[in-house]
Length: 385
Image (cartoon, rainbow, N blue to C red; front, side):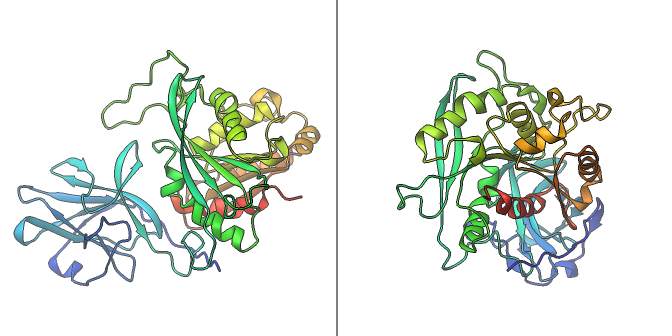
């Protein structure tokens, strides 16, 4: 069903267009707002943009590590065509006279710490994150709850698998799945397409039906101020120290009381991407009595690179046999363009006798295609007898 191919990553560069560079028609992107003809994706995965800015002196598109100068066209529009883009989901910005803006032709996604434009570049012969005819569909719920730890109302997204509403006596294991920095609880539901990935895996018999809970990582203790975010800058993710307590004291008890879960550590997993991977380690490693599966997608385990494995997270790795007995799966995944850090960590763990599984997403960087692939390979390993 899936054929994942290597695609090279584009590096930052600047391009100037002539009228002939965007002459081909292309197809409107699936991420456009209804009725918008641009951006248009061409067969070689290049993209033509068309922006209305009659009073502008210059317009650029920033996407995929490149900056593309658009050319003034008729009637106040600016047009230009990019180089071929890497398949998958990509944020982009329209820059008009030096001001970075969202594209009104695109749907809005919360990313880069703001509402942002994005485009889905089709991946050839790959459909595991697309809805499939004939495949039973699970449900995504928006669940509001009050957190005693933060003293605020909060929202989580909850995926329930096909059959949850009809097989009323059945109970399910739970995966707690976290977003990255600059995104929020909507990330896995919208950008990550978690429901389609899981529906397809479950229909193929390649993953156990499970509940997936996606919560916001931004959590401060009641009475503490929210970190200040300067205009155009990302707030420090390290400041949200209340997250593990909120998960343990508010989220997990709420999910176990309101959903048909199997409420024990053998049926509870946690994973996350980037910052969410760090929050996973911070939540799970001191609480192995509550979790038995751990996943990190493009995330760092060592906050102090000079610290030994036996020193971090309260010495949880100091006794390899005890750790391996408690943890059913420690899974590490990363894109091939992100560097060797995760592979080095995996090697260090294995040398110390800590069992871990390593996955490399070929041709992808710190982006949603990496994390979709990670979930696709991670989920089938959960909750196996």
